[in-house]
Structures are given as C-alpha cells and as structure tokens.
Length: 206
Ligand code: MN
Image (tube, rainbow, N blue to C red; front, side, top):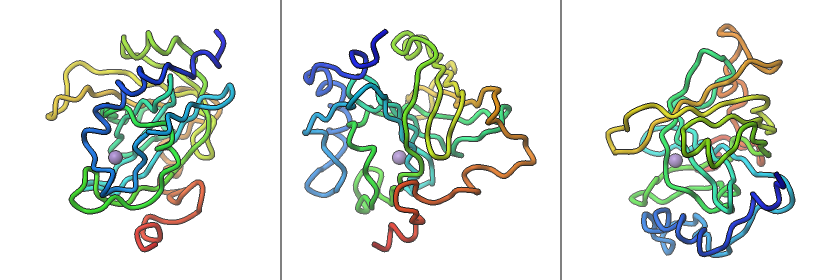
C-alpha cells in the first residue's frame, strides 16, 4: 500500500472529521490551531505525537496522524514500556495535523484549559490495516519517536466511559525496547518537552 495515498485525504472529509474539535473551542480565546490551514502530513511518513496536558487532571494525549487528521486518545497515566501495564486510552475527537506542534497554555475556562507540552513526537508505521483496525478496535503499529519506540497496540474495550467515549488500552508489545516493572518509567525518566526541553512549569510560565 502506498503510504503517500494513505496519509492524505480530501479536505472536505477532513473538515467533517474536525467539526467536533472546532465546535468545542473558541479560537478567539485559545491559541490552539483551528486546522484551517488543512495541512496534510508531508512526504511518506505518518506523524505521531504525545502531548502532556495539565488540564483538570494530568494526562497524555496520544495522537496518530491518519488521512489528514490526528486520531486521538487521552491516556491518563501515560504510556508505559512494561508489557503488562495496559494503559486506559479514552478516544477523543480528531485533532488537526498542526495540533501536533502546539505547545503552550490553553486559557482557563476554555475546553481543556491548562498547559500542553509536546512530550514526544516522531513518525509511526502501521503493522495492520489502519482503517480496519480503527473500525474493529485493534490497531498495531511501530512508533519512531524520541521517547517511544518499537511495537505498540491500541485495543478497544467493550463499553464506554462516563462521557460516552469509547475506551481503549494502549499496550506495549514484546520487543527489544520493552522494560520490566523495576525499570524506570519513561514518563518519569523523560518528563520534559521533546522539542524545547521545557518542563510543564516552564511552559506555563512563558
Ligand atoms: Mn488533553
């Protein structure tokens, strides 16, 4: 399958996918991108980003670029290299591709108010068919980030969270990158921004 064709999508399809994202935000109030640029993933690589987000509760937004948007999951505890640590990943609205470059503070009172850090970024490579995986709730892929590498899976569970959103599990698969329960957690070992090296406090103060 040619990756170039899979990475792009007609812009009206992207607009449709971003309708929910846009409806939830007031772009006069927040510096988050509206996605109006309709920026597509460039080249053959599919982008991936994890944003550490100090909202009401700290969580990690895990995003995979696919067909002109970032498919997104909120991972409360963040990713873990320990295969047995199945991390709850609540599916959230698709985000614009350029959201992956957003590091800053969403004003209080706005949706997701709080500080956002680009905790990791890089590219990803599907191992299984992506559209089918998203539909069936079983996605396997390789991450090539600064912090997250190797084989991972997202598996959808039955039922939804209290807000009606589908719940998935983010799971590390066995490979040379996996860690044991005694090894340092990647979220603690490498807590700062992958692009600016800043801490959440430093981003919030800027
Ligand atoms: Mn978030």
